[in-house]
Length: 163
Image (cartoon, rainbow, N blue to C red; front, side):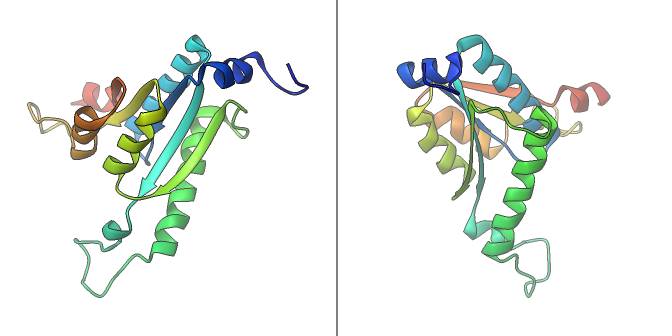
């Protein structure tokens, strides 16, 4: 091993084993990140944390038409989301075996693309308490349909328990 390399980094480089986890600012996302980090530890895999933002989604449909979220603000908010989610999972220092990506594009497309290089794709899913029987949301549905690797869906169990 080279100086500063951990056994996990060397194993990941040799095997190409990566777990990709899509995150946003939600309890389900934080739960998915914690689960994915634990699984990466068990597998000796690297972890790639991805937050996608969509330029087309910058127009807030619920707001007055004149109000737009600029792409620059969306990117800035994306970075803040990534920082908050990573801090909640790892504290002040993200481990070296974790890579972080802020990607422009629809989460459905970005995560499907990243799954091409992954051994596992992990997403969080929030089911509102008043929507029993509802299928999963559009991002999870797209990941299940298009991913090139197995997909794990982590539910926000605290929210489900409160229902």
